[in-house]
Length: 86
Image (cartoon, rainbow, N blue to C red; front, side, top):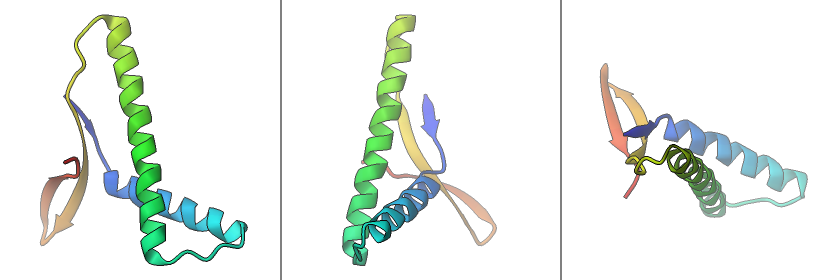
């Protein structure tokens, strides 16, 4: 199994990129639009990762391995792994 960690950090970094790109083009995004565009960018990145994994498993002639993107959340000194794939 492949675990794609730090999904939350990927979302945050894509949100910053989308916001910066919009500002450079003179666009002022509301929070809903920013979130929607950021999620689209994150999904694009995850598709690229999946395609890369499929290419590698295909070259090795092995079945596609299961994968899941997750976020880590630290709260009350406990560590949780939260699946973000539905």
